[in-house]
Image (cartoon, rainbow, N blue to C red):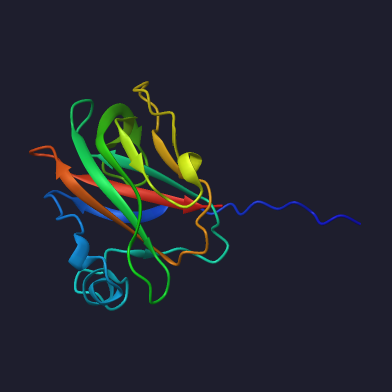
Length: 175
């Protein structure tokens, strides 16, 4: 008898909460496991902003919400880590723009990002390893889809620019 196909149906969870000032992107000297543990690790880092990828989360979906609708923007870089390994660049996005669709992840009115500008990716799996979904500015929910987490254990997103007077959050879920 063939195995039954199953899909993990995990809800979105917060990847980064309410970022209002830009992060410094990683440089050659800060892409080490030691920097990750001391600064970004979810349980031991000084800022603890990385999140653990659950063992059954092989594919990841990331979306964004903003304080203000239609004009606010952010840019980001995403990295993954194996236990004890260096930062692995997944992708960067030069501009994520807020749309008019309201986010209902929390009781405060926020707006989903609906446009993803230029994405640069160098993740395992080649040119299709990270995909943009619904990212053409139609007041929907623009998403980044990581087609295979490749066994990485942690994910880190850094917002390298943010519109003045705004803040951005990132949400993710695996399946």
